[in-house]
Length: 158
Image (cartoon, rainbow, N blue to C red; front, side, top):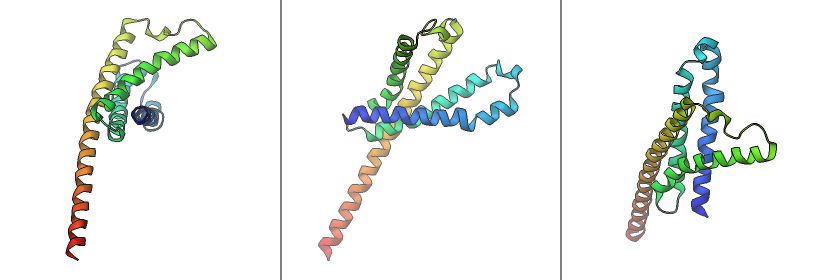
């Protein structure tokens, strides 16, 4: 259960950071400097890729740090689970609300390619974040052990 909660909290953290980036930090850049002519270029897509990488790096790191074991795997699972949950949410919304088609935005080869690029970037970022979370956890545990040994030595010497 702790593994599932670590991955879900990592996904929520990644989604929260991504939403803050896109709607909070980058939104003024979009509205101020991007005219409608520039909005059709690759710049918004590049910014979206970097925002996803940044968000899932921290989501993978958080899940990896909180996991009970196999920390790097939990970090990568943040990216995998988020891409598994997204189509399920689309299918569920389509079943409840109805509409034309659940994956209407994935009709063109460009959209499929962009989705594939996002998937690869998210997996790579969550893997790197998972490695960082694993390293951070090991460092913190070693630091705690050193502190405990120091306390024991000072208590024995007193």
